[in-house]
Image 1: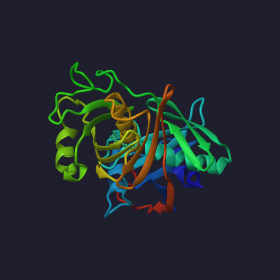
Image 2 (image 1 turned 135 degrees about the vertical axis):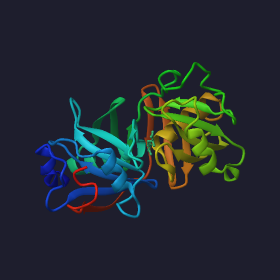
Image 3 (image 1 turned 30 degrees about the vertical axis):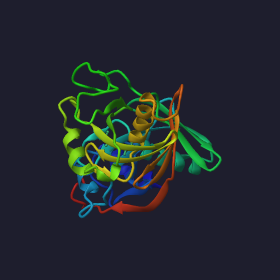
Amino acid sequence: MLREGLICAAMQTRAFPPDGLPFRKMHGAGNDFVILDSRGMAPVCTPGLARAVGDRHRGVGFDQLAEIRDGENCDIALDFWNSDGSRAGACGNATRCVAAEWMTETGQDRVTIRTTRGVLRGEMRGEAVWVNMGPPVLDWAQVPLAREVDLLHLPIAGDPCGVGMGNPHAVFFVEDIDAVDVAARGAEVEHDPLYPEATNVEFVQVRSHDEVRMRVWERGTGITLACGSGACAVAVAAHRRGLTGRHVRIEVDGGWLELDWRDDGVWMTGPVARVFEGRLAPDFPAAGS
Ligand SMILES: N[C@@H](CCC[C@H](N)C(=O)O)C(=O)O
């Protein structure tokens, strides 16, 4: 059990236990995560630890680190970190991964997960784990943006839509997604002054009323193979622009996600996989940071 190794955290120290810090590696459609479990104990992750573990050469490597914590009036809580050590307000694919693990471990078919945007719900439908990522934020101040603008047409070159999903997104609709330099344009838009807390950036080519192709540049991480909250933002933006219905399949670099924008929020499903379990060495550079 991951919890067994976190005795140090329970003692309010950040030093790793003598046999190392246990973690799980998972991915959802290629969006990869290190998952720590500090239920019943003090949280372990710090910006320094996230950066060190996130280093793909000297650490484990991940797009996001998710730390499972005790939930208040819900099953569990989740904190998310980007590989640059910053916090992420939402992570749809890690939420799907942890929901799937929790349901497998408990044998239950529903889970409630507290995140910074409130309590999210997950449920098993047949073989598929669906999570409700909550309603989109369509108020400019809450996205947040720096000033009042029309979210459907942001004053940024390329005419993106602005959407909040507990984290900010800028969604660009393009004719030919293969012609987009995602790294260059993504890095540029991430720090556009209109987004005071920076933004995730999605590029979308619409294929039909219920299918789109998306590529993503994530705030604090860079290009990833998928972004769940980004896929939610894309589904919302595409429907608001009149390009798709409320139910859409999204091809990302790492596979397919399915989105369903309902009255109670944006539901999402897609593949999840456990990759391995391991332990960070007790003398790992960030131990105790
Ligand atoms: N990959 C995640 C999104 C991660 C958060 C993002 N980089 C941020 O800083 O907001 C997902 O699946 O939603």
